[in-house]
Image 1 (cartoon, helix red, strand yellow):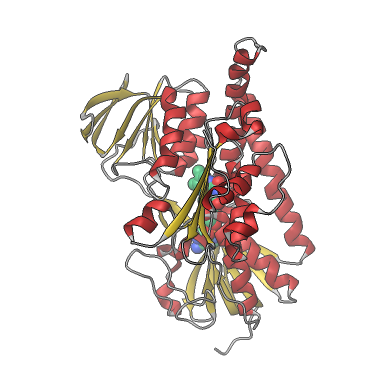
Image 2: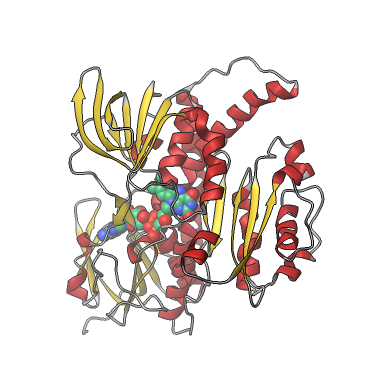
Length: 466
Ligand code: FAD
């Protein structure tokens, strides 16, 4: 209170949550300042997350597809790997997008301030500017989009051969043997990249399954297709210690397959935590939950009525599309509009080979909760397009409420699963039932047809499946 605000909306963090909030607020006529400590906008997603990982996964998938074509009558020479070129390709993809964001900020007259923000009080932040100076910014409303950082396992030694996802995306070298700690999306995506580029990979996961939010039958298809990548897939296992030696990292694990193994590179992908503590949120009256995430209501408003928070810093799932959606809600609410976070679902995708995409209620979870459901499964062995594409192992699975027949969830495993799952998301948001989906004419021959067919299976219309 007192000093006139320097801006209507201050946004802290230039990732998907932050830039979406800043741009929406500016489009609504607000004077916006965006503070970002890194040299480029885009946050984790564009710089060291979604985008560089997909650039590498794209190359990995094409390389392996080319190798598989030998079975279809077209054989290529053994591919050679030029790591510098691959790194440059990835860097080019990232800079095209981060430069694009810079232009979009400029067009909207969003002032981008380079530095690290901490709250001074309920209406102001102090920014330690990248040039060493400091600047106080008084705001009318603030939106915190500070994101998340990788969890560092405390017992791992400091060694350049032990990396997190950021280090792995730099492609320091292609190891002969690599250990991935954590069988979640990030771990499996990076395992796919390194395996395609020639590494032998092991995975250690403390749960008894990979991707615990996905139905077991779907994950099983993925596991079979990926068996060739892994020497050891240790589920229900833990890394107990790592000793750095000159000729490798000696890793002791307990549980399933307990023993000592040696690796040239270790990726720790055992989760991410909110990047909230450095912000001194208490000075602004903003509270955190027990796990350190910022507490928000359905308008993304914190305990401080003038401060909003969006994205990874507010909790799971830590996904870019969720951050973007929340950024829009917060910007609109900060401008006085009656916007709420009322999305029914947030889809997830592992962009591995094959991809797995899932959304909403799973069969396993519904059964565990005693909820009456109908399931429609369409094996891709009955899809002409899947057979032609060499993807007849895939599966499309839809989950419906038994009483209303409305769709409540779905999962797809197979190439392009991530691009297909959007249709299931729309169907859930629109309250579509099995007949709506089954009677929608899908183009033939496409993988998307399997969604319509899975709905017909649930309705008992389509019964002659392999
Ligand atoms: P972030 O992107 O983390 O951005 C926060 C920004 O705030 C950062 O730039 C940080 O520098 C800045 N910041 C923090 N504190 C301050 C401060 N005090 N002052 C100034 N600036 C500050 N999600 C998907 O949806 N799809 C994917 O395919 C996908 N792949 C991923 C792959 C990897 C390897 C990783 C690590 C993540 C991936 N994610 C993916 C997750 C996705 O990157 C995040 O969910 C998303 O970036 C979250 O956006 P955000 O805006 O909340 O935060």
